[in-house]
Image (cartoon, rainbow, N blue to C red; front, side, top):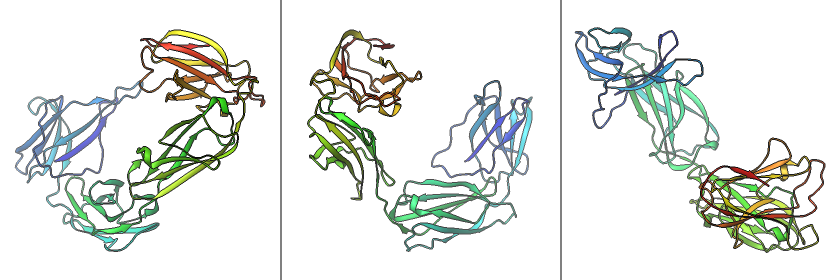
Length: 406
């Protein structure tokens, strides 16, 4: 099987992408019909196989250009491919692609040789010949365990590359796979196993902001993530642990709400552990103040709104330009009436510089539920002034969509 890709420009001229790679497939590919066809022809001019296709719009504004990506049967003894617009009886021959009789030969991976440990920048090298003296191109892939593959170089005419293995996932059975093509015919080689050190994950604290001053009455929403090169994003709540140097462990998971932090300065740390036991952490500092900033323990109530659509985007408008770094989910939060945090999508500054947009949860709010929006007095103006008080807005949802403000 061969993949033929390309595009047709506004002048109806066809352009083919090179190089092409052929593959063995376990079952025959499905045959299609379309406005174009690709024919596999032998040395006697006989059609060995045919595949139809219809190009799709490329999606460039103001252009009628089309693109195509076609799986084509490639039987033995194919000597050329012909691309026709329409059928071969009354159509137009658009392109002819020559097929060499022999695939690349003697493809051998020289480095790594196998059995060694590779870390940091290192050269990889291979060699190959072509019986037909065709120019060869290579695709280079890597796998930390010899099963799932990632492309390191889609095609190169070189026989050597330098890779930084410090940026690749590690494993004790790592392999390289090199595929050589003469433009049609393909040969593949697999390295012997070698070792690449397993990497530690990386932890990220998204909110609250480092150095923030937060009112105790508002509670704190901690949000963070961790990424591991070997396994991807770490999703197991047990592997993400939040701690305070003042109050100890605070909770587990990517999002944790805490409403009982001691007053004073805290160093908050997100600890991440991968499936291989590798660990990482990130820390921030913030200060918990002992009151809400308005002389009471209760935010000022701005009333209640009924029948709010499930995907409302709330707009909080201030009377002055706001410091955008203080517009975040730590300072503007949504809770259920019970006080449980709601994992809204985000809080972002408005384009006017004087507002904040509260983006709803990815799946929307629950129907018929009561919620509370709390705006902390930790939000500052562009000139550094804080709000005189914290505020809250209560609402109950209904079905619908749209946006609203207050």
